[in-house]
Amino acid sequence: MSGAADRLAVVVLISGSGTNLQALIDAAADDGRFTVACVISNRADAGGLARAAAAGIPTRVVDHTRYADRAGFDSALGDAIDACGAQLIVLAGFMRILTDALVARFRGRMLNIHPSLLPAFQGLHTHRRALEAGVREHGASVHFVTAELDGGPVIAQARVPVLAGDDAATLAARVLAREHVLLPEVVRWYADGRLEMRDGRAWLDGAAIETPRQC
Image 1 (cartoon, helix red, strand yellow):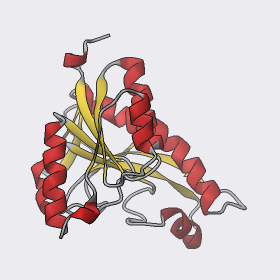
Image 2 (image 1 turned 90 degrees about the horizontal axis):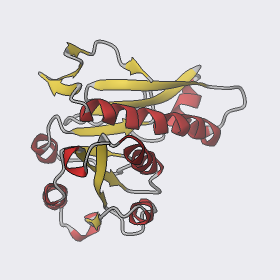
Image 3 (image 1 turned 90 degrees about the vertical axis):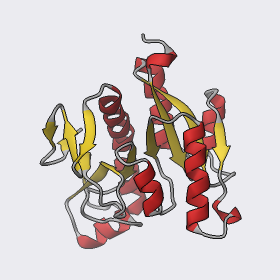
Image 4 (image 1 turned 135 degrees about the vertical axis):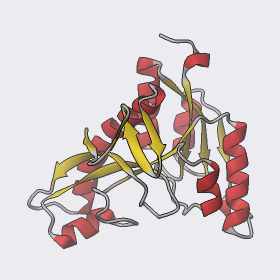
């Protein structure tokens, strides 16, 4: 196993319970290719902060309600990210829309996991909307963050069937279980130097990703 100094420093942004954060913490401990260097939340009551503390990971709270506007919050958030020594930033249930300035500040170093098969169902309430649309397949996507909400180049996806009798809660649980596999795998690709964003596209192993990889 490589030493801590050789591992990719990942900063995770959360707003809630942090189950995807836990998947990253567990993956980092298992294979040593990256480390969760810090966890930042916009909510002091986010359950994921306790997960980080239990793992000995530093935490920070940048409370969005203390700032007059999004620009002020995002500037403070960006400074906190830099102070943590981030090489990669992962949005794992971070429920804030980022300004163009913050996205540009970390361009090519920021990933988001979204609970749908993008470009379908960008935004909120994806599981309910999938059921209302009558789709037979649903899932999750990991993409590079750009100025377009949930519109950055998609890297990889995990798919699940929509079953008879599903409601939003059962479908969400099935998708979330796949998210816990998908997100660490994509972070490993980045840690190994296999993944990058170039010319507005996602590249893996030196080739542009034409269709999202399936995990």
